[in-house]
Each structure stands twice: as C-alpha cells, then as structure tokens.
Amino acid sequence: MARKILALLVLLVLCFSAGLGFWYLSFSEEQARLQTVEPAEFGVSSNIRELTALLENIYDREDFQIDAVNPNNLRVIVDGRLLFKFGQPVDLAQKYEALYSVLQDIKDDLPKIQYVDVSSYRTPAVK
Image (cartoon, rainbow, N blue to C red; front, side, top):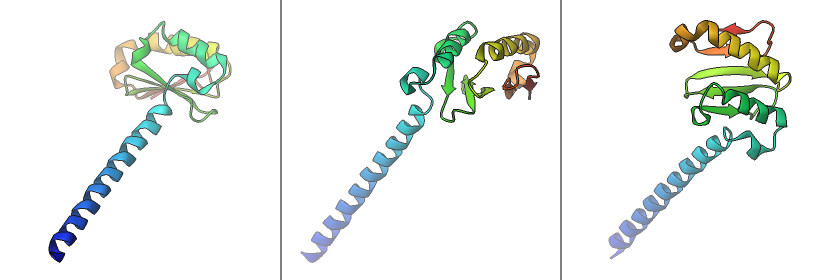
C-alpha cells in the first residue's frame, strides 16, 4: 500500500513538473513575441509607424518585424534572416531613403547579405 501511495506521489510530482515546464516555455515564447510585435502596441513614436508604412512599399507587412525593445537600437528583421539597423529612431525618412538606395544597388546579392546598417544614413554599411 505504501508503495502505491509513493508511486502515485512520484507520478503526481512528475506531471506537475512537466506542466510547470510547459507553462514556462509557452510564457517565454509569448514574451519573445511581444518584443517584436507592432510598434503601435508599444506606444512608440509616430515616426516608427511612418517607417512601417514606408517599409510596406518594399515588403509585405507579414515579411518584416520591427524590434523596438531597445529604443536606441531600432532594428527591422526581414523574413527572419535579413537585418536592417536603424539605430536611434530619428531621421527615419532619410534612413529609409538610404536603405532604399542601398537595396537597389545590392538587389542581385541580397541572398548573401546579413545586414544593412543605415544608422548613419550618410554612410550606410552592408555586410
């Protein structure tokens, strides 16, 4: 009888641990998703919303995510692979124009490109 109770307690602890682990993993994924959602949901400045509208001229909205977690390091992730670094969210119209110009120049090499840094829009960098 004592063995049955002990086995039942061990089974109960295992099920509880598995449930707690599953909850933690789903909570972590939700937090990561919230960090890269629509900028409007975070109440960020209107110039980031304008940047989103400008980027929709190049990509479908579903193809890119804006990472505004660090307000001094605005980034856009395209197709989960290509990264556009905008730096501080100022002069975004000029940075978009620099990005658009760079993308026109590198369109044939785009699969090889890791990121385009337009944080200094006068001297964009490509790697």
